[in-house]
Length: 144
Ligand code: HEM
Image 1 (cartoon, rainbow, N blue to C red):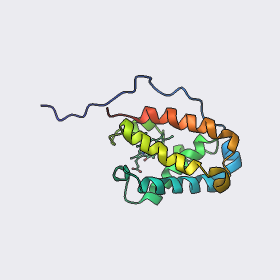
Image 2: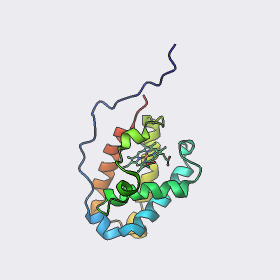
Image 3: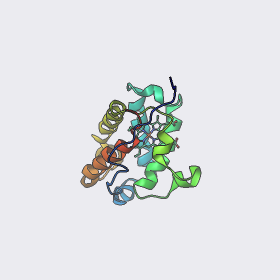
Image 4: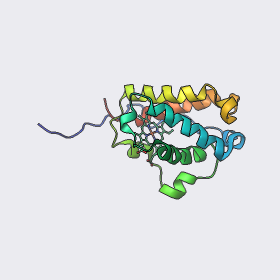
């Protein structure tokens, strides 16, 4: 019997959600985005999918924060340091199923609950950002 992993390809294909508004970066700046991602990784650290992540969560959070700075309308820090994000490909080493996705989203939701007060996240852009995360995370699922 083959030991090969069977990859799951989401039938909807890549997400069609539009990119988050650059007004988010304009309101938050690098410091708040790095703080938000640090708190998100603390949530992940306490979650059931912690085992997928490296030991040093603070360091992992900074790598993700570099990506979110660009995504939210700031300078392309991730591209400059690490090259083309190719996010689905970079997530392939980790067996991400729908249950893992739900845990990941719940961790982000916990952080977004008080993001306007804590990191100056513009309230008006929260719904579309949540939609973006829901859509994009669906594309990271690679395991049935
Ligand atoms: C579907 C749920 C998801 C799970 C379970 C998940 C899990 C992971 C794991 C295990 C890593 C590797 C951490 C490391 O080695 O440092 C990672 C890296 C990363 N993830 Fe996710 N992820 C998910 C969705 C997303 C989404 C939706 C985004 C962006 C909107 C994202 C952005 C990133 C970034 C920027 C990195 C760093 C990539 C790198 O190492 O270069 N992830 N994720």
